[in-house]
Amino acid sequence: MATQSSVKAVMDNVEVTFGGRSVRLPVVRGSEGEAAIDIGRLRSDLGLITLDPGYANTGSCTSAITFIDGDRGILRYRGYPIEQLAEKSSFLEVVWLLIHGELPSAAQMKELKAQVTHHTMLHENFRRFFAALPKDAHPMPVCAAAVGALATFYQEPESEGLIHDTVIRLIAKMPSIAACSYKHSIGQPFMYPRNDLDYASNFLYMMFATPCEEYEVDPVVARALDLLLILHADHEQNCSTSTVRLVGSSRANLFASISAGISALWGPLHGGANQQVIEMLERIAAEEGTAERFLARAKDTNDTTRLMGFGHRVYKSYDPRAAILKRTCTEVINRVGGSSRLLEIAMSLEELALKDEYFVSRRLYPNVDFYSGVIYKAIGIPVNMFTALFAMGRTPGWIAQWLEMRREPSSKIGRPRQIYTGATERPYVPMERRG
Ligand code: ACO
Image (spheres, helix red, strand yellow):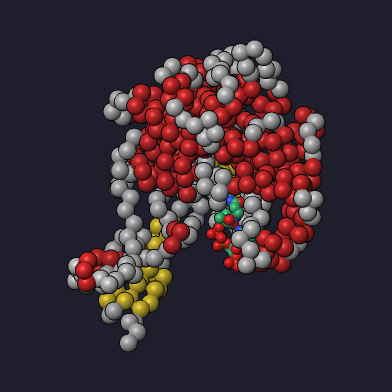
């Protein structure tokens, strides 16, 4: 017999009836009007849990950092629209904004720049750490391991005061770690950071200079990289950020939590997609396959091919970051004079997909990764470094989310439940009777 159940909205709470018992659950509202049912009492009062694979409709926390409206293509950090931050701010300004909640004053900005510059160097023993890794190691696991290893160099317990130092160290050392992971993969000596350069320029210098050859940083290229870092800086409760929060919820330290976030970001359905996009575009260019032929494969349900850089769990209209990057692509390619072939293929794939019933009906639009790879490629970043740059950009967001979670008085260790579907109790069968 079916159990009688119902869910009824009553003003600011929802009444749920199940098995003859009822509970009123409060509705929590966000500052942009979103509503959520606080299901805390569902289990104690009705013996129910919620089931939501992939957390597609589950709010894991309240947060004041980033607002996304996926239907309207809106992204704001601390209330500021991403379009305005992309046009007017710098990555370090966004770092301050995400972590402290307000835009920095001139004095605060000066202090942040000085502190970040002071902490860019890695401990000399890191050379031996990198040397122990295989030469063809992908930079993402190298970065994840190196960030985790920072916890062995800075072992102080994380008091509120010391957390500030950990935060600065992470922001400052991420470019050095990412550049070292690249230099290691091509067998070149590591370059020490240069304190006279800004954040993005210093990273480009550590990537491309050698002890025998100077590298002059093109300000247009540095600005494009800074923009990419801004656009990737936070994206509320995505897979890697939720990982950082979950790991941090056990009171694991910040380095360990961010290292876990880097590992989560590596996956091809998350940050790894930008590498996959460029590989897809290059395959189409090399095979002289038309965009139409590729789209047909992406739509075929018997074929696992996906149009990489398309679709998003949250954005069901254009990802605003993709719109900004599409414009930047043309500017960068005009400036550096690289091949525009990949951009042409990307634009024709987009044009066809946005007219195609398959993509339209599923509300699949370009995401941030669709054009970011074309820019990285044009400015000379090797494909296997794309996701490492994403991690560099996302670091302040991870840190801000981790700090918010740790400072929330009601925060608990993350521990989802499950609906068990395995065997019910049965007696142990000795080996000789198992057949
Ligand atoms: N190409 C072809 N079909 C797609 C694509 C795509 N890129 N994305 C989704 N679909 C289809 C699915 O096959 C599914 O079709 P169905 O309803 O007939 O089964 C439908 O659209 C819904 O897709 P889901 O996978 O259920 O959507 P979900 O929200 O779980 O996944 C995701 C979102 C992972 C981003 C997905 O769109 C995807 O795999 N895109 C390509 C990878 C990518 O670009 N990832 C980067 C995301 S942005 C970021 O992490 C920074």
